[in-house]
Length: 228
Image (tube, rainbow, N blue to C red):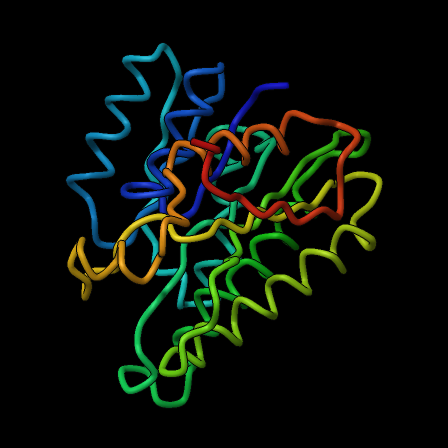
């Protein structure tokens, strides 16, 4: 199975690793970004060097109108999208988003709107697959809005797997600690993770395996470090 894959939050970190893993195995990639234009353009070039097509999509997923219209507008340009990976996420302390509205918009509502639009754009008889990026790390007390939005996305993954079947498979990937946040030093991150560090490449491999395994839906896969 190959075709076009839309990965939100593609330009850096985990999104980049997912994109390169899929591109290396024959997928064309929609590179979504908001502010990271330079990194997105470089990733598109890297994908093209692998022999695949890349399409840039710049929108703020916190705007529900833009999130709703992204897939219809892309489909009008490049045709059917075969896979959707809801990777983009906001991870900020509660005091930066006191009401939790931006966390909810990006981490919960945008995946919901994108998933509905993805299902709606598929022609009759065509099948698609969605993979949602979840979180297997223990919740932090000052990141309540983030935790609530990811809990919703976890529940939505299971519910959509049922309601979207059999046309669309829906699964989730929940890694342990992957990369330090912008507020952390490498040392603090490793102390907090206590050895439970997963590489972005491992996450990318897990996403691809769920995309390319046609018998699997409604599953949430926790990604743990490789055995020594």
